[in-house]
Length: 174
Image 1 (cartoon, one colour):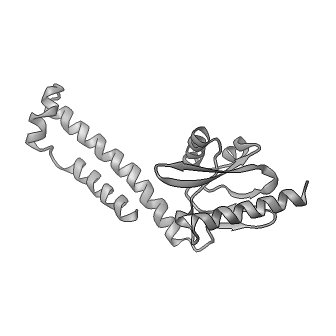
Image 2 (cartoon, rainbow, N blue to C red; image 1 turned 90 degrees about the vertical axis):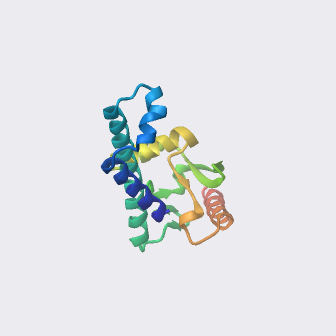
Image 3 (cartoon, rainbow, N blue to C red; image 1 turned 45 degrees about the horizontal axis):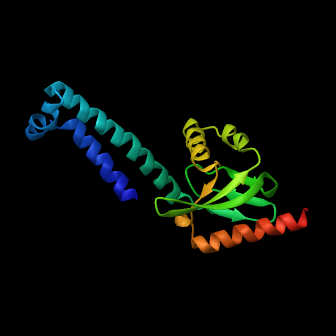
């Protein structure tokens, strides 16, 4: 993933620094009545988007690669999530209503459905993190979606551990 992000940053730089090829200027852009200036502006905007998006992804991937802290800590008290760029930190079991499994683009996620999701969104200091968590909440019904991809266990193991601790907590506190 890091290599892919770096490649797209390079493509973004290339789009900004080079002139659009003549063949592109004569093909679809002429149909759309783009002038040479419009075509160059289009390439610059596309390049900037590529650099911003891919550069951010590369930054978070590098940050996670250099981070030696555990991605997820599951205890009797709750879950400490450090597994992604939108991790929320400690989530006590009392704040979790249920654990759900969802699939997005052939990738499975474990959603921790929270009693008051907005509290977790609001306490994030980073505007990027708040926006990403809000999008996750709107799309998945919770701001907390955990993937096993960045963890040192399988999806099945992760799901079993989370469900076991959640059931234990509910039995103990019911």
